[in-house]
Length: 402
Image (cartoon, rainbow, N blue to C red):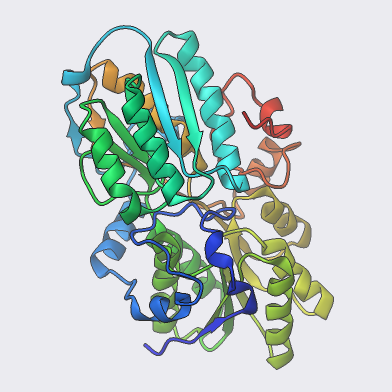
C-alpha cells in the first residue's frame, strides 16, 4: 500500500511530548531524536498482522470478572498463582510513575489515589510512596533504583515512560523478590507478576477506521491527525486504520500535529482549500475541538469524525450533531494495579497479562456519558470508572491533583 505522510511543522520538538492527552502509550522502542524522527519513523514497520488479529478478536470477547467493575474484568486471561506472596497486614507500595503531564494521566492519578484511600481504610495498603519521572527515562530509572535501594517497598507499581529503556530497571525490581505490577505501557520482560493494560492500539484503529468506513463512500477523503511518530500504541492505531482505509479505497492522508490546536486548524484549513474533507480520524482526542472549529470557520459541513472520550470532544460532538465516535483507551486501568496488589497479598490468582475491556462511546450512549459527567471539566475522561470512589465527583471536578 502506498503511504502518504505529511510531517507538520509542529512535529519539531514534539517528541518531548511522549505522553500528551489521550496518548496513553505503550512504546516498544525509545523515541528517536527530533532530527532523526521522520527518517526512523519511515523505516519501522509498525503493522503486525498477528497482533492486529489478536486485538481484533479481543474486541468481541465478553470480559470475565464482576459486573459493573470493568477495572477488575479481564479478557482471555492466563491466571498465575500468587500464593508465594500471601501475607497479612497492610502493605507499602512504591509507585514509579512516568508522569502526570496530561489530562488523561491526571484523571487516572486522581482515581488511583481515591482507590488508595479505600484500600488504606480496609487495611490492605498502608501507603503508596510515589515518584514522578516527569516524562524522563533517566529520572524513572533513578526512581526505581531509589525504591530498590531504600528497601522499604512491599510491592512495586511501574507505569513505564518507555519500554526498552525501562526494562532493565523493572528486572532489577523483580530481582528483589517483591511483587512487581506494570501497567499502561509494557516492558520487554515477563518478570512482573502482572501487566495491566486495555486491549491496545490496533483495537483503537479498528474501531475508529471501521466507523469512518461505514459512514463514508469509496473515494472520500479522510484527514488523519496524529500526535507524534515512534510510539508504538499510536503507530499501531494508525497502522490498523491505514490498512482498513486502503482496503476500503478511502483516500486517507495523515499529518503529525504535536497536538497543537493552531497547527490542527491550519492543516484542516489547507485540506479544505484543496477540496471536500469528509472524515477526520484522530489517534488521540487532544485537539479534536480545534479540528471541528476549522470546519466551522470554513463554513462547510461537519465531517464524520472519531475522537476520544475526553469531554471536550464529547460535548462538541453533541453540540454540533456531527456523526462521531469517542474511541477509548480505558482510563479506569489506574485503579487496577492497587486492586491487583490486594489480590496478590491475599494469595489470589491474577491474570499474567491483564487485558482490560476497551469500548468506544457511541451515539447510542453519548447522552448517558455526558449526563453522568455533568460538571466535570473538559479535560476529564468520560469512561474513567471512578464513580463509586469516596471523592466522587468533587475531586475530579476540582482536579485535586495529589
